[in-house]
Length: 468
Image (cartoon, rainbow, N blue to C red):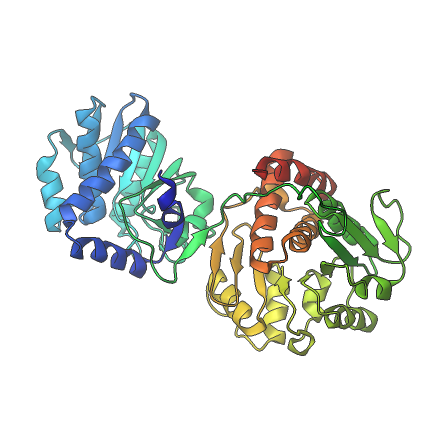
């Protein structure tokens, strides 16, 4: 893919935005038929590679997603793949009828017994807003169960594109999902994204759309400058509390994510690594002019003393990552003008929404955007489908992370990683993106059944892989 389109092909569009993008192409002189050929033949090449010479069954519905299926089938036939089409319904749009007329291969009835190597779902696309009729849902399930691999085109049939919610129960799981033109929100939203398999994209030439979300991308990190020293590289202060283990996990990750100096303000810390500076004097940490960023929350506790400590940390007016217990204690009046990153999970998000007078209604991305706008902070709403929202409406969606992250302490590792990047680059949104990427990549490197401590150590390898 040419680098000039890298930013465009990373955008994530709603159904309305995708329709507008296609209308722009049509207004500029590209016909619907030409767009269908471009999308279908691009998807056909992916299917051809995946099939590896095996037999392919394409299920075509009545709309333009079905039209894409007819194009895919003809492309496969031209390339000598064994292919047949199951026509669930006759084409109902001009472009789909034209694509059907160009297909010269085998067509079988919907009630025929069909099995094979690869099944391609072109029943309904991203515009679907209601449940599949019972007979079509049953047909989809039968064909999926009788093939070795299952490929969904654009968005799996039965999935609502803007939310990622299933419109029917018992939908199949997919080996691969091939997005057409642009990513859709369902590709990154639970529960749909967990069943979509590997994600691929066919670029059909749509332009950048105003207000579009974007996919979290691998960051490009640079080594410290030749004249760097430990303070100039980024000094991070971590404010500990009642449970020092959580703060130690965060510090362990921060030491490996790029900061030049990490200092933990905590009492009675046992077994701290030798490279971590530990002090019981929190005022010395908060008042140090060299401190580039702060992290407060991991292991803080929820007492009055903890609330006082949070307020004191925020009063220092330094870039700050707020995590864990500090998110439950946070009140709007505590926030000043400092750059802040909030890192809530679902329960902490609900507490923040109560404290900031937000309804808590809507999709995850909508809730994150609302909190970012209300607080003026960057929000990392973490979970299996993490999103990053900026106060100016920026929205970044992460690929589904390893489910092995569902173990105690990994949130502290994420907070330490983001805080380290904040101390290094001083930019809240950039630090959130870099930290979230490094955290997920470290989890991949750990494999199965890792601990939070192992994850924290793996951050170093993730950083190393991003060095330009």
